[in-house]
Length: 347
Image 1 (cartoon, one colour):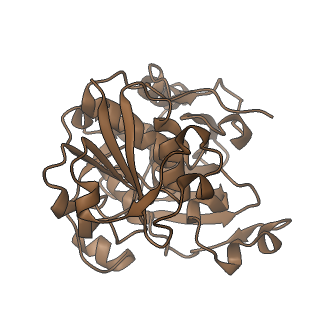
Image 2 (image 1 turned 180 degrees about the horizontal axis):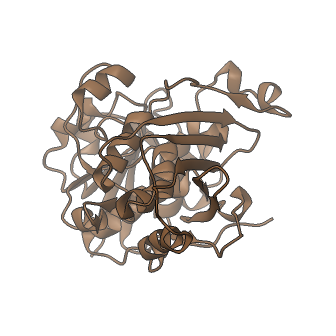
């Protein structure tokens, strides 16, 4: 069976990455692409790397244009997806790449986003531990999916095994992330200009203000944490794509080194796209560019009595579009890895 697809926000980074991956999906027909200010222009004008989709023209983003497809991807700025989702009730599968349907707590939404609160959807991180199982089991029957925030899913995948196994204390997490500017979207912003970021590392949303914090707390609570307290600091660095997350948490008293490593090995030993590296090895963002892969390095710092987890992902693939398509495959009953690669692009 071939499924018809519409992608909104198709002129942006997330929308473009969704299209790039879908273009090689044998079960998908990309029928419609939409935008706002760029409507009426050719897709190739804004996504010149998508040569196989040069025949498509960006249409207006309206419920009428998005309706009538088997699958709709909403790759819109945060706070804009909710206005369309009620009108897409007849679409069998809708996947939101924004934040509108990620959070279960209205209070968290009000504190970090504001505006209308929308119904939470199935969270699109298949490998995430939830109540002793994997989130993929929920996604198999989902008709509405919220793709994750890239920083949030990276931190959550880094620490969920230790939380679920009871080997780390989630009430004292520190996470520092080196992130590329593509995660901020394609809109022109002074702080994202090349002259501002080349040769520099720039922290932002410092002091507990980043919008992905409640998403991390929600995911780790679902993994089994009673209390999640996190100091989260992202740092903008001059690489177009990528996240390198360094997360630490205290070791629970009496837990052995073998038990700590076994928690991550048990969680990800059978996974295709989340891989624990051999002891003593740590990932680079260069190893995951273009791949739907999260590479994890684990260190046990007994002097500080903390576990250190270093995780690398491509924020546009595993962090957003790849997670969305992996979740789509599960919802449709297709092979989970269809149109997704674990291999990066080098050099």
